[in-house]
Length: 99
Length: 452
Image (cartoon, rainbow over all chains, first blue to last red; front, side, top):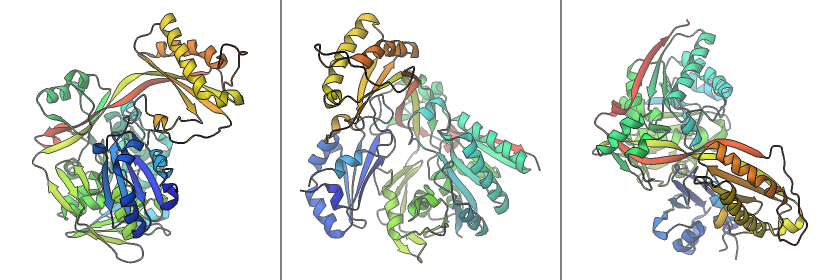
């Protein structure tokens, strides 16, 4: 077992407008990309972020060795319950995911 | 014919490399374009129609850009003035421009493009079926639209072109898409539409598409088949990877970008290195839409907040912070109901050092030295929020973990311990407005500012 963040070049997250958040996993190599496309299963990722699996958009971009996840923010940016206006800390959940 | 756009940085207020800017001016640009805002910092800028950046900082950077414009002899365009692009934000930028024109002795034609939507007029458009939800959209109706603090529509290339057609030296635009200010002139001059929009998307954050993101300045050359992007700081390089990776940034779909009047599809884009600094891109497609729709952003008052901050350092309380906070919350809810009985309100205790950032999504736990307790009260007006905060105050200071222990006293970092945060704003629309004519929801104001 290893944390995902130690296996890849970079994981970042950011708002894509106030209603969406997007997480980019830069895998670093074609081999790691191919491996993680298999390993990272969408239902597990949806649970991690508290969204319904069908609301999680997943893009596997071979040219960049990037797996990208986009989903409606669990709370809209700036709502009273929002804890992270820029959505940049959502990446941490994926960085610390055991693989 | 290539159109050369000089982009000083991703946003006015974050700084740029001045030597690189002057290199860009010397290279003969056709237009200088910079963004002035974003929704990125939350709804308060739009709610209050104020800039999140300091006036002095914006003025000092705008001075350099006005000097660059005078030297280059080409239009200078700023989109989404004053963070939110509300009318007052455009006028704030106009005031800065007039002050600098006096100081620099410049005579200018200044176009102000206003993007703000009058709530009552938009409510009528809603009732006429011209407002459609995007996904996900907050629930709204005509009455709710009428109560918004500020609503803006995002202008596209057509409205910027109208401002440029006025012969303006400087265009101060209200809310626009980030890309419109860059794409407008190449499109007007017959450049490849896919290339104009794709180049604008790559360039809208300045040097973020390069290996030195903070250097700011880039040059975009858009022609009939594609575009070339070149960073101008000595230390910066664009590579096919750095440029193509930029489509990922703050974009839910890395291949599609919706704009007024259509969308950009970069699925077939090809990126190649021109040399060790510049990248050539071709192959993106512009897909026109059957109707002309502009996106709407709105902020409404969602309550008034008062907050308190206490710090637990005693190891016993740090260890049991969650149990303590849960018990305190239950106690306070009963006390508030019994002694104040306010209108609808919320109170939260966020434990900094435990899970304040991620809340119920948090998957990790540790042993913090201390725990910050951020109490956030949101009520219907400021007086009620502060009344509740004053009830909370002594208990946040002294509440015990169990009934059978001595009263603790925690750390309050300042006096008074409560802070009135004022109105809390919420983003209240994620919708589009259908227009018969691109200028239907926008207004142009042209002024001669003479100090030559």
